[in-house]
Length: 111
Length: 114
Image 1 (cartoon, rainbow over the protein chains, first blue to last red):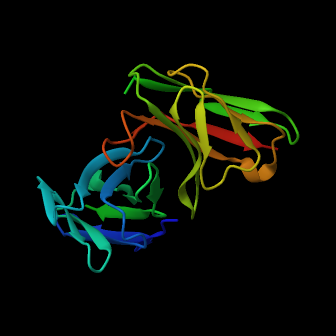
Image 2: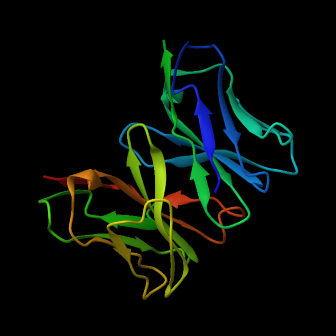
């Protein structure tokens, strides 16, 4: 089955800096790569996703890039703010219907 | 979103007891899922369902039972709870297969097995 590795497990940045979280996947048939944000005590919520026919997608301060050849994808957050502090999960969906999640990255943005 | 609700929010039970976690969605989504979240493991799929009366195992199904007699409900039962099942459980739904539509999560149930 699919295996998703996510790095780093924790990331501390100063407000205004950029943050990058990286994921690799194993199943070359995977074609859908969402990112979820989970604030403390809350549910995970989708923040951005990308499909395998697209190399990059942006939404205001967040962007996701996908390298199908290398089987890795990354989340980029620019101009970080304290409210960006949360756990971020990447995920990949293979040829069947279920998502496999990475283990998460705790992002801490200090004022 | 109020469209998917889980109950209870918190539950404490003893080892060996049966406990059922409830999940209800009002979107008429075809797919429903149960995940458990543990520190260091992220979100792991327990069971999922593509439609009423169709269920399938995920990554960690042992010790759990599900049913889906109605599209809107997807209860998860721990037949004989163990301490290793202490976790936060999230129910989720999606309109179609996950590759084509996002997951919507419930608020979660924090289960403690003593």
